[in-house]
Image (cartoon, rainbow, N blue to C red; front, side):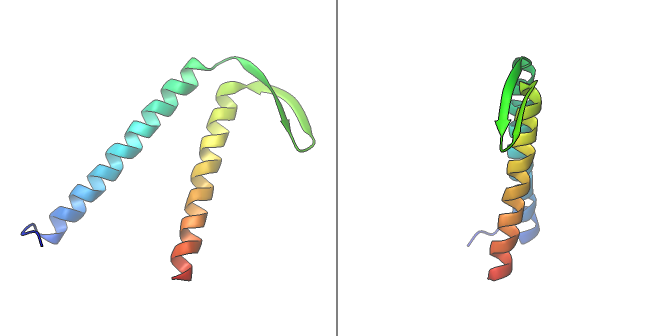
Amino acid sequence: MSDEPIKQRRTKKGLGKFVAAALVAVALVAFVLQNTDSTPVRWLFIDRSAPLWLIIVVSAVAGAVLSEILGWIIRRRR
């Protein structure tokens, strides 16, 4: 086992998660800024046109929320 104190290992792990989240956020912002055209959207009974950046942001938020919900369910079952 490492001689590193537990608090320092937790800090490094937290910093790594923060850096990864920041990189994903920067990539998402760059992707959104490059995709500003309008696009048709068909979902269930909805048939509309929307800006592509809005679809990207809504999809990213929905994915993050579903990921957190599923993670919470898995942790709760253990």
